[in-house]
Length: 138
Length: 138
DNA sequence: AAAATAGATTAGAATCATTCTAATGTATTG
DNA sequence: CAATACATTAGAATGATTCTAATCTATTTT
Image (cartoon, rainbow over all chains, first blue to last red):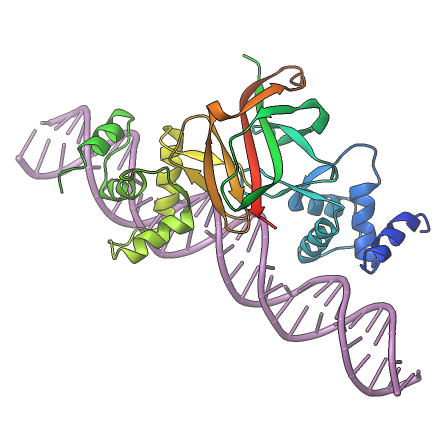
């Protein structure tokens, strides 16, 4: 092991200690080309399969939430009983196939909303998320 | 009791038996002027407070899901560990104050989306949901 | 119209997702 | 190189949701 440089740096610079659990999780989440959409359960299964040393689910929760606080991950608004996270932290939207529990990113630039009613008084807009639910043709 | 006519009719016409549990739930959910946004827990508390005869949480789940299947309720796509339901079943969108767990409907007519990327191949659009997250000013 | 059968409904118990907290680890200070 | 303070981990507790055996209701049979 030695190619964790980037992850170690990033963790340190945001005040998180680069423990072996966190580095293992970083590797799974961020060392990939494509955006990764996952649930804690999916992440857990990855560790179970890989015969990687056991990590407690509680640690997966702690770490994923810490990464979210630090802005490495985004939580996605979906119904259902599993919380989804996304390694794409830019403003963006999603296609979602409920049947497949499959998410596809939509770039922010590819969506435009040209009318919205006025925001309730005393409040301001924090973010706008568009979810396009899709299903099989015919 | 005698003004359950409408609920009894509707339940019967969609193949659900008008049991006393279901009628009590209908009363809470539908006998009101405004759209009602709720979680199972909120519904449960309503029954606890009202000293209404006890209904098992499992029955609240069964009933709410049955009502959703029949189109009396809509499930709302939100993150968080409680599932929200809405008595407004028309196509519409939401303002959501995460801090307050407070939802406000936005009429479909008041939102327009004028560009979206092409749908993934083999799939078609089922619905489009816009969630506008809001927070306190300043 | 009572008994038998089939199917729907209810709700306690089981399961699964998430959070809490006591135990452990790591950095810092004297 | 202890001692202290704080961060991290993970088993246990909690809370949300689902499962399924028991109960209820409608329908059929006699």
